[in-house]
Length: 177
Image (cartoon, one colour):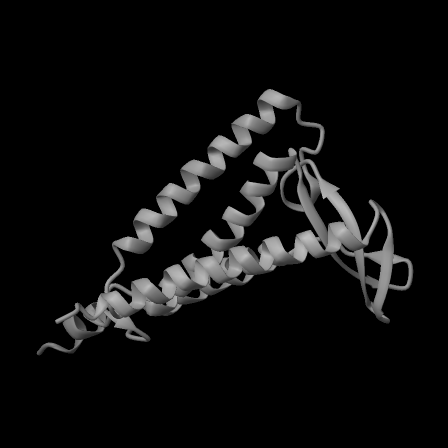
């Protein structure tokens, strides 16, 4: 009989694959249909705008030279390995954390492959309000963001005793007569 962890692990691997494939397919479509800097209107607050991010999140460190970019890719590989090991060690009751880590891993893999293939990350989701524009991002960035938010929310909600259970040891000692 299969361990109860098998479905959770399979689901996590499938989610990683789904995020990675969706990220790569959307990037291929956008690169095929838009020129660098070209923008296509989608909604009053959303456009598809092709941009290349040579840095890290929000374009920070975009002036990296070749060796620094290779170092950044190495750091991302170490983080991916760490998160993979963490996810593999999760218990059966930690499906939410497994899902959050799978989102982060799928997104990290998508952006890392871009860096290895192109030397930059393809971004295209452009939210704006009038002339104000948020940073342009991609599907991988969305997955990473939701994964990190989910991870922190779950870590905040779960303590060592399980979900939503407060540690009442201090209160218990005070009630002993």
